[in-house]
Amino acid sequence: MSKPFVAVLMGSDSDLPTMQATLDVLKTFEIEFEAKVTSAHRTPAATHAYVTDAEARGCKVFICAAGLAAHLAGAVAGITTRPVIGVPVDCGPLQGHDALLSTVMMPGGVPVATVAIGSAGAKNAGYLAAQMLAVGDDALAVAVKEERAKSAEAVQAKDAALQAKLA
Image (tube, rainbow, N blue to C red; front, side):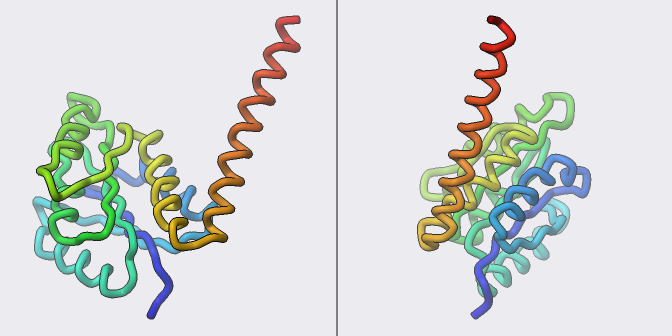
């Protein structure tokens, strides 16, 4: 059996600048991933085939980014019972609000874990995938805790610098 991995699916290649944050987080934790452009609307058969194949090859989490109608995460969640994380992309006339609603409003029994709109959500999708995988990987769990501690230390250092500046 191959090593577990995360599939990062994007509805368009224009989503890559947003989703680079996801890829960077996965790299930080040395989590293997595949990134692919596929569309719930324009390539539904190819999307279905990829999800089925990826699951058979060891994909443990799917991260799906899309803007506008943003049906990719929901379409993937309808194919697999693996966790699906949806990232609404901030594009179009509504700047991602339409994508947020399309991603989060799933019927009962077909969940999509939806993160924030845009790059903050993309970053959190990577962290959430790491946390999901860490449930069965003690070394990864330690790495996630250490990363969280480093983040807290950075905030404390910024506060110390602010306090020194104000004194």
